Length: 259
Image 1 (cartoon, one colour):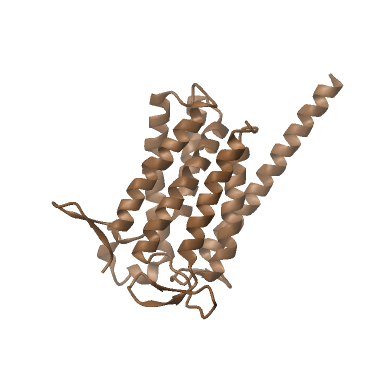
Image 2 (cartoon, helix red, strand yellow):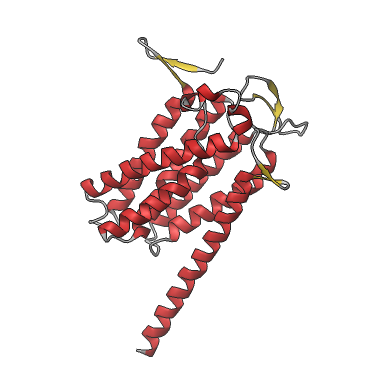
């Protein structure tokens, strides 16, 4: 039985409650940051339109990715596909589709994508930290059974309690620290895009490593989980974006010296 919050007239799963809390918390953090960077991007109608598009497209991507990655489970429980409250919104799927939508939206509005991307990085770090608390309560995204000294008695998605690698605790700590780090860097007024690149690199590299400690079922590509393959792709993308940004800065500095 998964934990729920009793609101008198109905009950809501803790997992769903944390997702519902993490989304507006991340949105508020993103908006507050954006107000310090771009008047046009932070104009309320522009920001709200972007938020609606990102959440709608991201939700579709998150659910589709999760179901695809756990298809063996859902083939026997087709009725649960339309019940994400039971667990099952994959951040990677949301990120992929939401970024595509954000690029298109920013181009249509003629606003730099990097303003939105940096704001999203801060919002995502906070939202994911809260979301992983829900995963811990739900038993979702659980760790492998382990006999190590740091193992903790934790349930899996089916309620089976065993000594496990405390994956959810590590993920919560990861995104809390990442959120704090991004906020600190933001106060230094870095070049647009820096926060997003840092978020993508740090989160993806950490999750690539932590993926070896995940115990939930998924699709494998060789020895790697599909999540890890996507994370590796994100690491490469972040590295390329970082090199591109570094080269752009050097070229601008060179042209300035020549001029």
